[in-house]
Image (cartoon, rainbow, N blue to C red; front, side, top):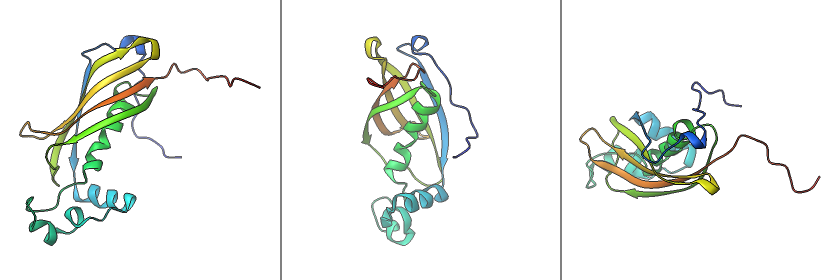
Amino acid sequence: MISSRKEARDREFSSIQVGDKVSFTRMITQDNVNLFAALTEDFNPLHVDEEYAMHTQFGGRVAHGMLAGSLFSTLVGMHLPGKKCLYLSQTLQFKSPVRMGEEILIHGEVIGKIDALRILVIHTKIINDKKEILIDGEAKVKVLDGEKVQPPFS
């Protein structure tokens, strides 16, 4: 079992409103990219080979889009709604690459709430320090009620 350094927020569905927002920042490092490449076995040279990447339109290595996109899991699993979250879906539109050494802002805003199903619709985006949107999307998450579900038979 992995011990967590941080505690996930424990928000009740009823306390979450359309318009609620949360943001946090992360620095994307070469170590992050190298670890992500090792984890996923995605060693595309655009991400791991500086000499190759220097000769592309990006002029150097860039982070995997899914490395940055995976931070939306942190957004919903730790912050909004947090502990009682079940991720249902996530759309991603990659608008610009995330570069090594870049600090990014991961942002979510509740744009919809389906009370009967306990589902939140969250506009997600990643922004760089120049205020450019790098990744844009929408998450749907179910807020669990915290009680164990009884199986239909014993």
